[in-house]
Each structure stands twice: as structure tokens, then as C-alpha cells.
Length: 255
Image (cartoon, rainbow, N blue to C red):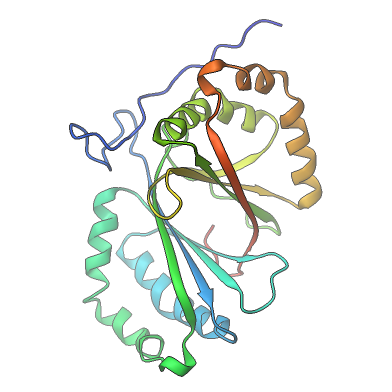
């Protein structure tokens, strides 16, 4: 079999002094993703969803966040988690919106009940959040079709910062193309800049059901291009731990 050539798109965005953490891509503006996970109290889900649908999501859309994904974990009983994915067009819009929400009259009025919750009736225990920048190889999110589906959210922790850098390079220079070929349907890829369990990267896939998911991952594992790519010495010893969760979109999710 002829050796397939994988072409690098551009250098990765890193934490260098000469290049800001959230620098512009030289070719195409890379999106910024915020992933929020609510650890809910028993009975907190209905109140949180009321806040999201009536206050937060309308305000974010009005201020420029065109897509807010809202996902529940499959097969989890209460107390459950709810995951939000916010898609920002740039780092500037991310920081601007954080400030605008503090003074947005419509948002503040619509969120009064949410913010006045008493301690003994708290909606959640904690909110965890991570801030990501899209990969060069996939600078913008691919919105899944509006039909019943599952989503797989995967986080790859690396042995070191360099290990994660090399794993991102591996995705950009070949693995994303293989994902597309075997129909591991990508929603987004994100380098985690701020969050827990650093250094790491996070990505999301979508499938019609678990049967399709399992079949397509099997195709990936057997793919000759993947086998060749995975044996490259420069990509050895990159991933130290993989965390995955399975999600389903809520009826009001925009992703």
C-alpha cells in the first residue's frame, strides 16, 4: 500500500510568550469552546432547565453565542449532571459576553429566581468548567443533524504538555481524516487551555445509536492508515488516560 501523506495545516496554538494563549489562526479563525458541567442536587434539574431555557440561552444567543449545546448523561439517575457547550466565534466575544451578562437587564430579570435560590434548596453542588480552543484541523464546530442521536465526549489526558502537543499534531496531520473516513462523526476538537486534569484535550463525536458507534470504532481500529499512523515514533507515549461519557441532547439543545 502506498504511504499516505498527511499534510499539516498550521502550527498549534500554545502558551508561548510571543504568541497569546488565544491567538488568531493564520488561516481561519478558530472557535473558542466553554464546557460547563453542573453537578446537580436531587430535584435540581427542572429548575436549572427553566433557567437555561428562559434566561441564559436567550441572553447568550442575543449577545452573539449562536449555539449552546445542552446534554444529559445516558443512563444516569438523580442526582445527575447537565453539560453545556458554549460556542464562541473568538476569544474577544468570550470575554465580552462575561461582562455583558452582568448588566444585561433582560437576563438579570429572567434569572432572578435562579439567583435567589436558598442554600437548603440549592440547584447544584458545583459547576466545573473548561475553556478550549479548536484544533487547526477542525477550526469550527460541525452541528449534528436534528434527529435522535447519542454523543460521545472524550477527554485524553497526556503524560506531559509535550505529549498533548504531539497528540494534537497527530490529529491534525492524519487522525481527523481517518475519523472522517470511517464515520466517527466529529462535532468538535478542543485543546483544553483552562480546566481540571491538565494537560489534556477534549473532543465530541455523534452517532445514531450505540450500535453505529461500536461498528464505526471497530472500523477505525482496523483501518490500515490508522495502524500506520499510530506506529509513528513521534506519536508514542502521548495519552496517559482516557475519560469518556455518553450524552443525549435535550429537546432545546442547539447542538
